[in-house]
Image (cartoon, rainbow, N blue to C red; front, top):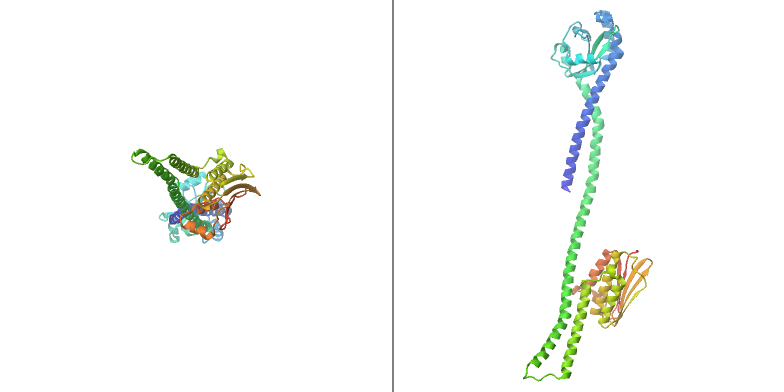
Length: 430
C-alpha cells in the first residue's frame, strides 16, 4: 500500500509538472498574443490615420496632434513607449521627442516585419542607443508591425510594454487553469487511496482465506490418511492377522508328526473361520476403495453410485434400499459429488457406529431443490456424544458440514439415543 501511495504521489507530481510546463507555455503564448493584439489595435485604429505627410516632414503641429492621441489613448500602465520608423531606420515619431529625426539601424526582425507584414515581438535590448529613454522602466517587450501612412508610405509602428504586465497576464491565465488541474489530481488521489486501501485489505483477507483453506485441506488430507490407516489397522489388518494365526496354527499341527493331527470337524471350523475373516477383510477393503476412489458420477450416474453404497451396506448385513424419486440429471454436475460424499459418509457412520439393522438412502426434489436423506434405525446419539466423538478425532461429519456450507447447501442431523439417525442434505435451487 505504501508503494502504491508513493507511486501515486510520483505520478501526480509528474502529471502536475508536465501540466505546469504545458499550461505555463500556453499562458506565455496567450499573454504575448494579447500584447500583439493591443499593438495592432493601437496601430490601425489610433496611430495610422494620423500618419500624414506633414508628420513625415516633421511638422510640429502634426507631431502635437499624434502626441495627444498617443498620450490619451495608447500610453497606459502597460504601454510605456511608442515609436514610428521608416524603412530606412529614421524615427519619424516617438512620445520621447528626443528620438524624433534620429536614424538607427533596424534589426533583422524589424526588417522582416516590414517585408512580411506580420506582427512580431521580442524582449527589448535596452543597451541599444535607440532604447536609452526606456532604461528606467526595467524589462520591456517590443511589439512591432507595419502600418501605412495616409500617403501610402510603409512605416513600422512599435510599442514598448512592461514585461511585468505581460507576466501578470500570464499568471492570470495560469492561475485560472492550473489550480483546477491540481485540485483534480488531489481529488483523484484522495479518492484512489481509500479505494486502494480497501482493495488491499480485501486482497489481504482473500490471501488469508486462501491460506486457511489450503491449511484446512492439508489438515483434512492428513486426518483422512490417519483415518484410513486406523480403519486398515482395526479392520482388514486384524481380520487378516486372525486368518494368518488360525491357518498358521493348523499348519504347524499338521506339519509336526509328534502332535495330534486335527480332526475333520476341527479343520472344517478353521477353514470356515478363515473364510469368514477373509470375506470380512475383502468387504472392508472394498468399502475403503470406494471411499478413496469414488465412482465416476458423470459416466455411471448418481443413482448407480448410491446403489453401490447400498450394496456395501448389505454386505455388512444391513437391510439397505435406495429410493430415487427424481432424476439428478437436471441439477448442476458440480453438486453430484457433494450428494455422493454425503451419502457415503452417512453410510460409513451407520456401519461404524450406529449398530443399525437397516438403512435407507432417499433422493427427492422439492420445490426445485434436490434433497438427500440417509435414515437408519440404529442407536442414535446425543449432541454431547457427537461433540465427544469429534474431540476424539472422528471429524468426518465436521469436514462434511464445512464442505456443504462452502457449496451453499444445508445439512441437518437429527438423532437421539435409541431413535436412529437422519442426515438430510438440501442443495440450492437448480
